[in-house]
Length: 493
Image (cartoon, rainbow, N blue to C red; front, side, top):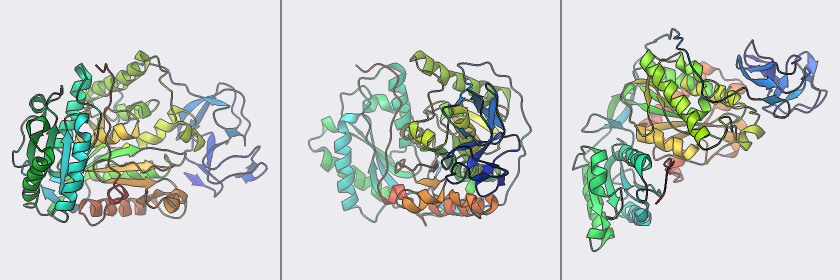
């Protein structure tokens, strides 16, 4: 990676550079001059590129030139297009992955009776159906007033589902809600139902499986005279149970980190995403777990992950998930490459390959040990690939439901969105960090200035351990940004 103050050469094979600042027409860039104005974060042709020739960034093609591009020209949607197509055949070409073992690290967590470890001691209200959303909100509000200081908070998570759903839609709603009920950050859970919904409590219990009756309580609101009074009574019991837990020293191998990006810009693949990849590798080397989702944002870079699968079975399951998502697009008459978003393009990302090559860097270089279907929970330590969309709210929800106690969320454009769990927002540039201090927790933009990747990795890892230990609360926690969304793909009755 070569940084010459004005523009950045990311890989020796690249034929484009990334502008570190706005560049004016005629301004010197390395040993040539810009032929036109180049916005910050956007691409400049390093060499003459012929029509149809591949444009290379990160050492990989990100598309092909629509017309001849002169050295020093602005490279974007007007002269660059994707190479992506639909469903593909893949060949397993396993690569050797170095399995480092790093020093022992710990955090202060809450050991649960089932052996899982939480980083918060909260009470969660999980609705079986959207009809009781407001009841849940009212209960959470009154419970937080009544039990303030006794737990880390009482939280409800609104969603519109749980009734009038059929088949797979109904099942994935149940699986996501079940994953939240089982989440170790919740010391106690109140499952709140209406009574007449498809996903009524008796039906939901079949998907939920075994639960600890001290930790999980159920309330069907149609069966009681005053659901608020009864709800507060049950929450009081859960609070008393939660108070039996204290933080104890736990190995970092108990951590599950969700890896997410949103509002990406051209610096995402240069600063924040590679930094998160280093964190993922570091945690995996300590025996911990990271979970990478956003399957549509792997298109064009999926082979990098496929070649790191630990065996042919994991490879085949990853191929099935990738092609399954492409078929999902095609089934709805949509082109596979309808991405990046308008904000991504404004920030300097042109094609889905370019976005994907930046996105998958969050997964570092570790071996892929497992592939999870949407709504599955983590079973194996190491890097897991989780089926899920790029949509920020849906993706962060499925990460939490899989068991991630903390989510690392990189962003170049900025977003206030937060998951049910601590969501560490990592800015790709210093300007965003400075301007949005109520959104952003950590500044990876310093990598464009004077900080080394090694030093930033150490700093961020310590920060994560502080969040896990309750020494630091993230912006989404401090300002109440906790939301969920569930994927829907079927009929509503």
